Length: 399
Image (tube, rainbow, N blue to C red; front, side, top):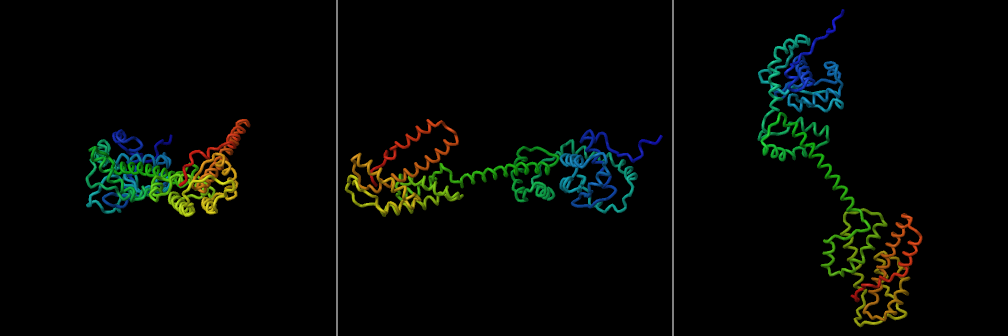
């Protein structure tokens, strides 16, 4: 009967497996054996070795690539393995070192290492108790060291953050001060400060990206001129200091919004545009005001001054629409028998109000049509609008 065991056995310590986990103990011992055979490259007192995925699956044929990635990551988190390569699924290689510093006297390359795994297993079995003792101490204490005062993240970690997560090096280093302050204040120990720093940077990066997305959305909403747009308090203060009539400013807002919304433009300087718009209109308006201070009734054949239509053109109000308002305007004020100093001023306010009201009615009708309201409600709303005379309410005495 052929032997069931025809390959070299893998040697690992049961007590080490109980400390760091069975899979971790098996992989750690296997990687340790391979370094003992192939030698690797000494760098910064650690012996580094690069193995491609094919070699890894040859050493550990009972694990898939995902398993190798998971277990090696666990060893890193436990502070017993160092890795300087992207995830296996991306790079298809593992660049690693056992987290044990090597003295300078032992820095010569293992050129005379035994070429057979069997002989190395014997040598490794002899050294295993000491290796196991070091690893158990590192894991049981949780790498139990306080954060050094001069601690800096390894260069390899910064490169991995940039490669795997697109985190800029400068951003990662900006988190160092908060990281150091946080952990020193708590006087806690850790087996792997690089691992904790990596998690800290990842959390901060996610928060940073969320804030950036929120700011971008807020900026887009600010740049969009909505129906309810209003000038900022700073913009109004500038116009008030220029002694521009507040009612004149308020009347101009619907025109301004309508003009720019029809053009579908997006801007981050709507307040500046509004200030310039009001200043132009106010200059034209004040230049055209009548300087006759004697109140009078409106004549039956009254017509607005042509300067009034120039102001309305500046406000992008249809002139034919404005002229259509004259008969109703004259009739109303003749019926009231009131007297005022400037009928041009009142007519200008009247047309602006009617123009804004007309567009609000159009938007309201569109919403009603979409909502499929009953015809009776529509008829009642139409009659109310046709008989509306609210434009005459609250009109102040001429400027």
